[in-house]
Length: 360
Image 1 (cartoon, rainbow, N blue to C red):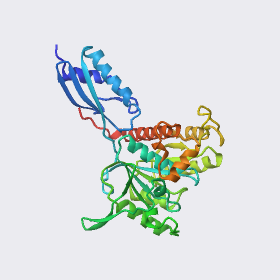
Image 2: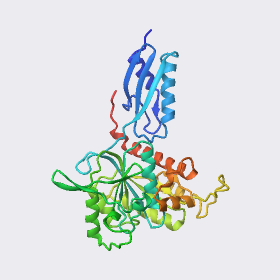
Image 3: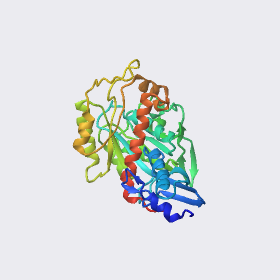
């Protein structure tokens, strides 16, 4: 007896997306279904190429056909991704699906290092990624991507002069730091800084992006409010270290994004410098700055811990050398940033879930 489309779809209704809590048929994730005899071919369209559940969903899809339809079926499942978005107003940055703010309550917690490695990790997993360096007081992204001597070229687009982002490691970049020499101070007041930042956001040809990451200055101030007013932020990531003083500032940063006038979802907390692991003792962890501080704060505020990044000298060295450490394959620090990217993509998919539509 031949296999029917209805049989296949009914079987796949037993496969749930663990994050979205619905089956992949209802979510419209099953595409391009073809059946030839016992050969069943279809695509599962994930909500992000960085989906941490990719292998599990693939295996469950194959097993569902074999168990519920025909144990002799030849099942070919292609895993693809179409990053979701809940943006309704596409007036600003129409080609950008998700805008992610990376913030910290205080300086010195490694916020830019997190932003840079997150961007590269997402790009490595197949996403289209851009990164805005909005830290007007200490723009470091050009250094971390080894592009300090480059400047975004300008071209005319529909009668308006537009900047073309600098590209490095698969990430499109624009930075306040490109507006001055590396050793030149830029003593901007608030309105001047906000104007410059708006130029970077709206006068750059970003094209089609799955994620645009915005590396904000530390603290809470004019730039944060300007960003929220300028573009619809999908969610904010708050970077902290385990010390109590950093955690107190983190709580204030989260409170700012939750103000009714701001109203930006918190994707979660990243705990940087979470523990120290000596190179000669890779299985040992020493909690120099305290343990579980971010975990306890996250539980108190009802947000997830997206990742814990170790205190490793090579992370700093890689940033200074202009080659983000996530590019060092199979090292503990690269694995930590890869897992962070998957957690961020997962939280964005969950945030966008109410807008998922059916495509069966």
